[in-house]
Length: 102
Image (cartoon, rainbow, N blue to C red; front, side, top):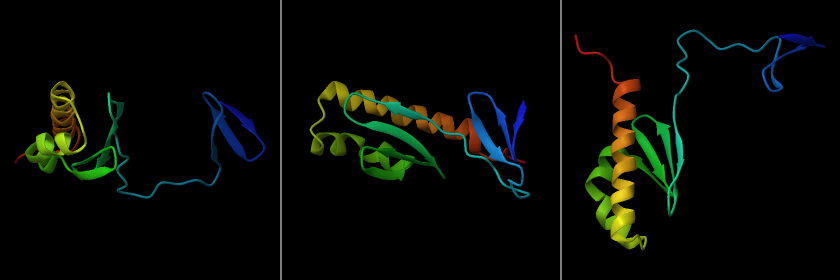
């Protein structure tokens, strides 16, 4: 790490000022962004994903993906593709955000 003025630099010119802080109890979000055949898919946190302009809970997409896909003009193979992305998002959420059961 090299110092440049009041800014520390690391990696590929990423910078964080000297007085930057993250408070106690902050959980940094892990997520993902995929570029599908029709639209992008983004895990946005709080058990929600965004597909194109639709941002809803994963459970909503699990129940409505077929009808939504048809309304958006997806082919049958594209509907199955996005079903897979929804299942991936569900697994990602469970692995990264579900609290362990006592």
